Length: 519
Image (cartoon, rainbow, N blue to C red; front, side, top):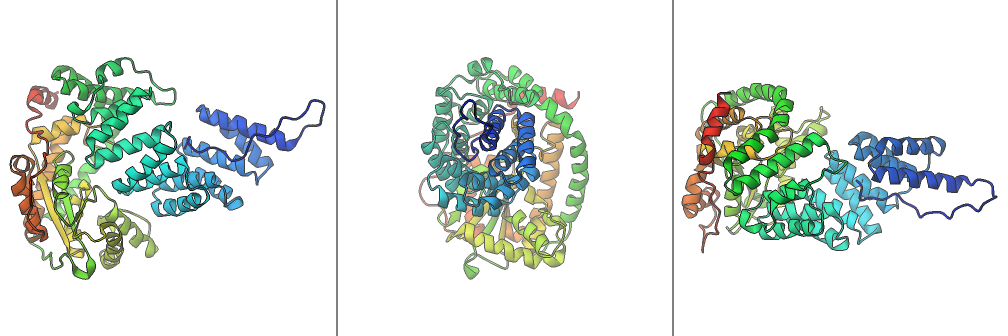
């Protein structure tokens, strides 16, 4: 939230000998609080703002800064309370509306975030913080084309806005515009903004596109005082591991991978054990007879086919999606939240406790879910015949989706177990991927996922295909023809773009991985 400033302009200082002026004193306190907030001294800033609000309950500036402090401390509920009060008192302040939009986004209310930000845009059409927040909204919804456009505008309005440049670089990465992403990230390095997150972003790009010496930059890296030391050290180790891997220094890379995953592994053990119980329940649900699915097709009432590309992380889903993007009539949806959004709205409409997990939705609400889903699909897919979704978590929902949505189709991706395990171990994940920090847990997860694929491929034989990453790389045209036929699309025309080739990546690490399994 640090890019949003507090409203108001600095007052003139009181002249010596005159009685104190509460107006000037309050503003001086607010300026002090904002300076402390920007310096990362959140508790001191909070104390000053709370004192001001206690004395002057309608002091919009103090409510605004107090909301930013709570947002900086990741206390989004209290941030929301303060910023809503500030906006209520002054609904024409674009800074408060922009900050409020950011908090809505953090709370998962992307529609409210967009509506609030639109009000701010009308008040301040060309502001970098507004354009940046708009980019974050689009990125959250996986609308990467629109996100890149918004981040690019924010970056042009304020080239010093680091978060806008990072947003632009990551959006280009998701879109497959890797050379542009590299230029953005390297531009930050050239301007001195080469913190660990910039270097980590560069490490995720193909080595031929990166023109800086990551290992040298990592050696000279200094931690920002606002960063968590353990998180910083884990990310440094992970970034160094990727750079060493690309340099062919596999033993050193492995040592850094072990260091990078040690802390998140310890933090995720309990959640991983709970997840195992859920996995077994999911596997039991997919085992059964073949189901009738696929009665609907593209073009019915203007509805696009929903193509779910499912597989474990690093199994080749993104590569398959990029390949499909060469076909006419396909809109890439990436890991979009369309299923979860419809589930949440169905729960809320019926006055039930809110959840975004499809498996928890009562069966009698499937028709309501489908109405919300189709409405969102029409907005996202536009005139396309096929809309893709690569969210790996929908493996649990596949039977339910196929039953509730006749126009659903499925691609199940498989890949060599060692290759996929290494690439998962090399990636820094968030809290949801509890299996990703231990080689044994990763292998168990991939084995479970493959059993899910086998069961689903049998039950959904008429509306699905199983494709191996290795086969797709060896003969991409054949893989594309298979998926085009499933979706009723014209076969590919013209040359197939280069996909890259990551087959056999685990070969230099197999001894390390085997030893890790027996430790």
